[in-house]
Amino acid sequence: MTKLYVGNMPYSYNDDALKQLFAAYGDVVATVIIDRMTGRSKGFGFVEVSEEMAANAIAEMNGKDLEGRALVVNEARPMTDRPRTGFGGGSRGGFGGDRGGDRGGDRRGGAGGSGGFRNRY
Image (cartoon, rainbow, N blue to C red):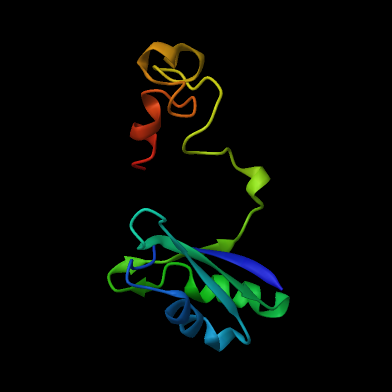
């Protein structure tokens, strides 16, 4: 099985809708990523398809218009290949990281003032 990233999905989509969208590519496993705070879709998810069908799915579904949104479909990359985002330690510039102690950085997981700003993207 090959895992595909599916981005720019309509926020109304759930696991079943995503699975139906890719049903033409065989037996698929679909997972829509849900925001823990709101319970709504984050607008992206993952679909597992057979290795034989992965290239077809990417070629045919990438850029497909879905409720006015152009889908982004490509092979998923392992988490270790991407920098982590969101709250976390380390120096990130601005008021974050090591310089954020007097601005609440220690109480907010080390993200300081930059954590809330970065999470909006």
